[in-house]
Length: 374
Image (cartoon, rainbow, N blue to C red):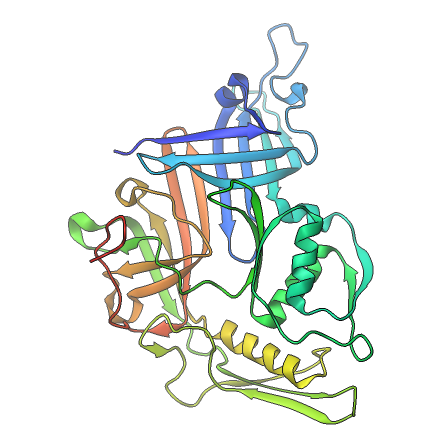
């Protein structure tokens, strides 16, 4: 059985033995489109002389204290699971010995981007340039994919009315992009991401469903939502010459994770986009394409990983393979969410996956080695 170990630091200093001894439970939510969240539950108690509460009165977790959690499963490389900032503490008091608890909640670095609402213009800049500028203002590394078009300030200027992370999420949504902050595995530094879902990466592992001794999931549930829209139409008025602009998108731009796009069987469901706030034909096309790409995610799965059998950490925002779930539900998925739970020596991982296609491409490699080669 691979051992599970973790390393917790608070403001760059390893957690004290008192804090580690009080830890009852650690939960980390690793999410594709929401901020990553860390929750710690610690036992607290009154000292024998009644003068103080353990941990609670030490002010170990002040507002926006930085907490980093690194986890290692067996001989695998220790990974930074979350780098977060304290946003809330909750105390639950009980008259039963040992039942009083302090809960600490922390959010990833996007919380720093939400502290201040701003009104500022972004003239002559593409959405990706805005993202790069904002990441640099928080001293973050960046992985940003270019968007188009850049805007002429005479005709169109992006106006920010809200926090930086609110603006980034708006820009990401209309481009079909993800936006998040994650610790770079090589540098150990937080990095801002602004790009489409990285579905073409090598899968991080293989989930085996009902395959005897090879099974590494305790439960697996899958569903196919057959009524998601697969085409989108949008109309707008070009501000420069008052000409009518429009776009009609019929197919997803993103790579299919199976042999045939979901919802491609005919009698497609179409939606008409309105009140977009956009006028240029290129921007309308980008928005309609983003809506179609998002709607193509119509196959969903979730379950509980057998961490001992899987032997490592599953991460969100990366592809993964599934085998043993039948022709419709086997193949490559994109990991939307993983809830990691550590209680003593027990390590649980609950996952949510999604997919934009049916069947197998024939290129899947279901026999896993360190290089994921057959």
